[in-house]
Image (cartoon, rainbow, N blue to C red; front, side, top):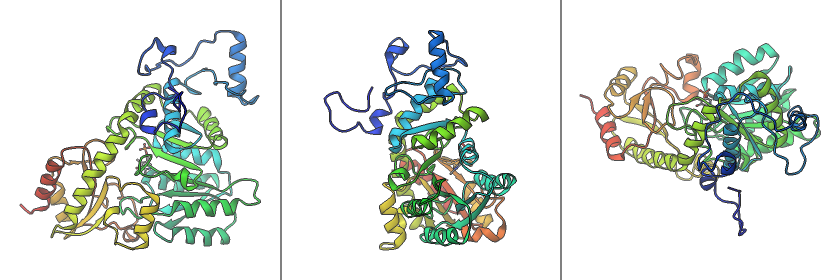
Length: 421
Ligand SMILES: *Cc1c(COP(=O)(O)O)cnc(C)c1O
């Protein structure tokens, strides 16, 4: 299936492309679905073909117009990954994608491919725990320093000030909305800063957005000017809590650099993971919409509950506030991560967590099943106590990832958990 109808008109929507784009059934005995290509190596039809495939793979020549890179070896390319990458790029409105073995493989390969000793990252804070560890403990060993800027309505202004004071800022890294506070950073403003800083420089300043929480359905950073869109595909894209993967989409020039590093560091995903991701992408839109619809109703229930002090969820942002205006500009839906503070501390939070029967007590997020967890003692346990307040984590805070279960059952479960026995 091609991107457009043979009768002309605009491109098909990503929901439609997710079912057929970038796959040619005639190459697979007419199979309607891409089979899983469990092979490490690919046979060449002729020695000349092998030579030409390698010339492209090693960048010894430019690709001829219309030339499709030949398959060589599954560390370099594999049909299951390629089809998934093209469908993801279509979803993000970018040129190209690269699939990785995990979200962390995607983020670390991106940093190692694009940053050099002496470079600095300005990052929104908080970011995912693994990303934080990479920035604080691993990249410094390679001479790459990260400066954190709290996520919020003024993050781009603060980043602009820091970029003036500091030498060598090379990447603006955002995770928005932030986890677990749902605080948002203005992607368009940060991307504009990145373009300003790039003026007259040989090496561009790259804006990279970890789009795991709302993308690709409800937030499209590339359309707002970001260079790279990064995902833990383990979460919503995989969507069934049964795989670990990552993906990055963006322009051809940057993606080529990432893919070269991926080939050598071996951080690509396995073919079977690519096949699982293709299955998942078909239902991404209906899953995320249903999850978001359920979450919106539960956030409302929480906001009205006498035992709840505070609910962090985009649809509950104060009417007329700059935060709400940013949400309206930047996102097309609120997603399904809610955090709320129960009246009391750890004891009250734990009592509620232990009373859930439908929501499962587990970390991770974005799957079809609803999950609850306690950020302070679980996902954010390694955040220094002094920083917890700044990122909105208190002893009574509970985070939930809302799934696709029947809303009435989720409501019943939540009310039951909140009512003291
Ligand atoms: C889970 C997660 C990651 C890490 O992804 P893995 O697939 O677990 O490696 C990165 N960023 C965000 C926002 C995440 O939620």
